[in-house]
Length: 327
Image (cartoon, rainbow, N blue to C red):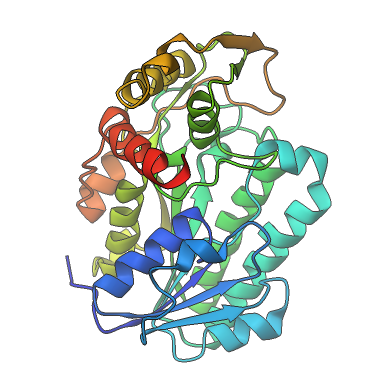
């Protein structure tokens, strides 16, 4: 793997959960990092460790504004495009805004990166692209029909990236994220991800609600595995490894019941009462995929991917971070 240092890297959505972790990591490697964010879902406090670094530049702007995109890519070697409106329920409630950000905004960034002669455009794709495909594990070239507006937008991103690679010659790599979790993931708001939301409820001794019977399963992926994949996507020199998409996951699955069991176990170390918090089961959520498990063979073979953190290992670290930062 070629070392990524002394480059200029643009991270869109850099004030978000994944984006801010990427900002910190690539700054620590001696790169110049530009963050483009409109703070619709990101937070300034996520950039606390970056903001005073002379190699860090924050551009407050919106990917829906093409001029903001063009300004952000000036002098940039690599783009890590994380900016998007996540959440299946959000997309069902407001498909127009989700499409505007995730499709029009993506196209703006791709066009700006192409015009700006960026070396490579790495973007956050999504496991939601697998849609109603029932086969497990999920393999990159076998997908089903999308089950939500969000899933449609993320699939369209892949189609645009492929066309731009073929038509304009820009190198692209899509990373299909599978249920990423870890430090700095926001536990608040209507569309909070399940792990930080459950952690906060358990810490507050509030009963938690699982959608369905708890037997839906996910390939939960710790943030440091995702950072590794982004670095590999930037650094690979293999021609056959670019202009394609990769599952970005651990390659194992756990049910929501498993997840709650682990969270209770790890949090009870800090507060024994958490073990007794009740669990309530509600209806299944519209647009949810019942089971998700990634094959990571392609990433291993072409990129040398070697995920270091299982769900349990990642949760222990994440729970410690939440307890010390949010309690």
